Amino acid sequence: MKLVILLVALGVLVWLLRGGSRRVPPRPTAPPAGDAPQVMLSCAQCGLHLPGNEALPGQGGVFCSEAHRAAFEKAHPRS
Image (cartoon, rainbow, N blue to C red; front, side):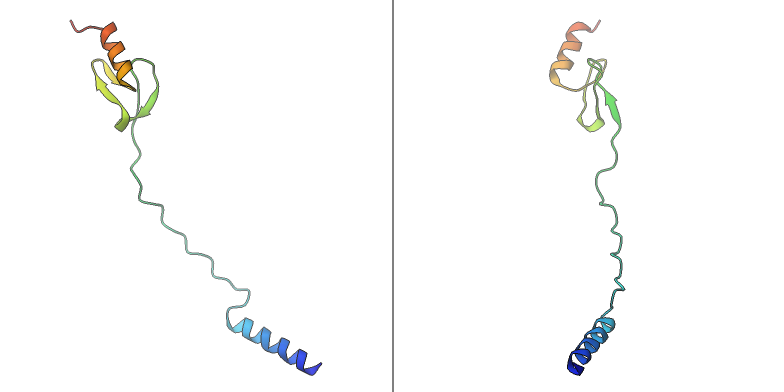
């Protein structure tokens, strides 16, 4: 019985020396250095909002697709 108590006491001592229940919280990580926020633009044909780097420029504004740019330019010919 004395041996069991001695082993438990030694186990508790080792546990306390290694840090015990005192856990160091993980260091907060910096946010990933991703892309900068994009300006949102709306398609001149349908009004869909899309990031500025995905918009297609054309006569009368920006567009979400080639089809919408062609349709807008056909409906609004240059004078």
